[in-house]
Length: 363
Image (tube, rainbow, N blue to C red; front, side, top):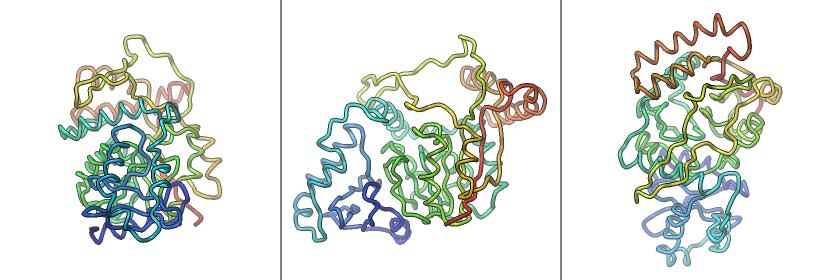
């Protein structure tokens, strides 16, 4: 049912609602995670543990799992409850809105489903990946051997490009089911959870490293959400993030403003023109330092992304599709030169983003 590695990682997964322990159970020829105290069962579909379905498609996958295994579930020992499971997975709840609407997640599921089918993993963002790699290399050379939780893992392309497919102690978490399926192809020895960062399904003091590239500024409470994330780290564990930072904004020229795109689903039907979360803003760096005071400390930072870099990326990288690694290195070098000179004249001309490492001090 489970490999030895998966079994070791799954011990760290808890019920995101009750925060109670889960145990793996056989369900016919498949498996799931059961919370004996509440009776909630979390299905495992295509190797992905589903804990927070949002779109109808993912809810239908849960329905199918429960229906085809109805006989096995009715004979299951250990307190399984169909009623509590359906309630926990919101299978009978229409939930028209919410922090993450169905329309919003339909966009992301369609995007990642297309990438899964074409195996287009989005490995062209060298201008982002390279700077993240520099910081990770400065941090520790044995990072790949530790238990890593990546929140908002997406396609896991950044870590795959940095370390290859050797991360066996990897837990990927994303609200997109199809993103988890792609990440599983990258790291077949890892464990993958379709779930929300708002209610992490991880027990306290359970992982060595949390990676959350471009996550905090998408969450409702932004940097304050570290109060939810840091407790899952062991003492001296690392949180590694990358986010835009609060600063005076210079209005972009009209011709540089991004246009929202429509992503087609597998049925070629158009989905809503969206792609930015309801909270896609920035973090307040000074407030972040205040929030972590006493619980964690800033171990390393790399401030980046000047107005010059934004223009070069938009014009040349995105519009003209000059997406080579050598071009990205040139852009990054120009960005660092700008920040060391023009960026010191005014905050609006300075860095718009930061890659940072926090070390947990308490446990």
